[in-house]
Image (cartoon, rainbow, N blue to C red):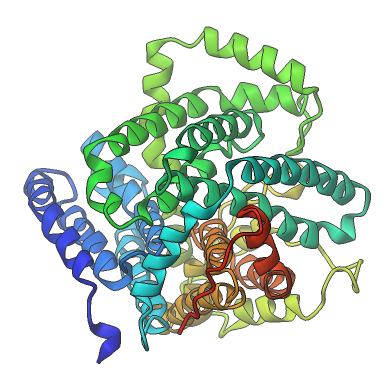
Length: 483
C-alpha cells in the first residue's frame, strides 16, 4: 500500500544515525534502566520512517519526536543518578507509564501517517521551496514589523475584552507563521541570511524576557523551517545544527537557573502568570541576575532539564489511582472536551475557565497548584485517554488524535492553493504550537486547533494569494495545485 511506502530520504536518514543509536544502546546496557533506555532509543527511527517526507516541513515528525523526548527524559534523569525509574520517583507505576507512553507516541505517529496516504506531491513541494527566492526582502521586513505591531494591539484587546481571548490567541499565531516563512527563506536564499539570524536573535531575546521563557518556540520553528530544504536534513547536525543544540542547552540551563527569582520579580510576588513591571525594569533585573550567575548554577540548571522535560510522573500517579481507587471514566473526559467546544466563550461568556489542575488533583491523588496560585498543571491527553478507557482502549483516541493533527495540517495547506508557501507556514505553526506537548489536555487540543482552523482557513482561502503577490512585489506567478 502506498501509505506504507517509505520516503527514500527517511531510509537514508535512519541508516546514517543507526551506528550512533546502536552505540548509545550498548552504553545503555550498563545503566539502571537498560530495557527502557534501549527500547526508547529505537523509537525515533520509527518516527522518521513514518513521518519524514522529502521537501516537506517535518512539523508532524518534530511534534511526535518532542513528545517522545518528554517520555524518555525521566528515564534519562533516573539513569544519570543511577537509580531504577520507580525508585528515582518513588512510584512503582513509573515503568508502566513509560511503556504506555512509548506505545502512545508510536500510535500517534501511525494516526498522522494514515492521512499521508494517497497521491504524493513531493515534486510540487520541491518547486514550492524554490519559489521562495521570489520574495522581496524589504516587503518581508515590513510584514514582520507590521505583524509585531498588530500582535501588541491584539494583546491589549484581549486584556480589555476577555471573551475574545481565544480568537485573539488564534490570531497571534500569524506572527509565528511569519517567522517560519523568514526562517524557511533563510535556508533557500542568500539574501535572507542576515535577516534570518537577526530575527532569530530578536525573538530569542524577547522570548527570554517573557514569563514562560518562550525563546524555545522560535528555536523550534527555526529548526523545522531549516530542515524543510532537502539537503539540509543530512547536513544540519554537521555544522550549524550542533551549534544550535548547544545554544538551546545553554539557554535552557540559564532559564532553569534564573526563572524562579525572575518570575517572582515579574509578577511582584503575586500568584499570577502576568508581567506587572515595565520592560525596562525587566531588562535591568535580568541583566543583574545573569551577571551574578556562576558555573555551579548553570550546571544545576542543566541537570534539571531532563526532569523538567519529563511528563511521566502524573501519569504514574494516575495509574496508581485508577482503577484501584477511582474507576475508569468511560469517555467522560473526552466527552467534556467535545462539549466544551460546543459552547464558544463569545456566545457563552459565563462558561467556566478550563483548569487543567482540577483534573490532575482529581485523578492523581496529588495536590498541585491551580488557578488561585497562578498555575495550570495538566495530565495530558495520553493520561486522560487512560483515565477514560484503560491501558488497552486508550490507544483508540490517541490514534484519532494523530489523524486529527494530520488532517488539520493538510487542510491548512490546501486552503491556500493560490499560495502554498503561505499555507505550509501556517500548517507547520499549527502543529508545532498545538501538537508538540504531551501534557496538553484534550480540551485544549480540540478547542485550540478548531479555533485556529476557523480563523485561518477562511483567511488563507481569501487572502493567501494576495499576500504572496505582495511579498513578491506583485510579480509572483507560481500557483501549483496540490493534489
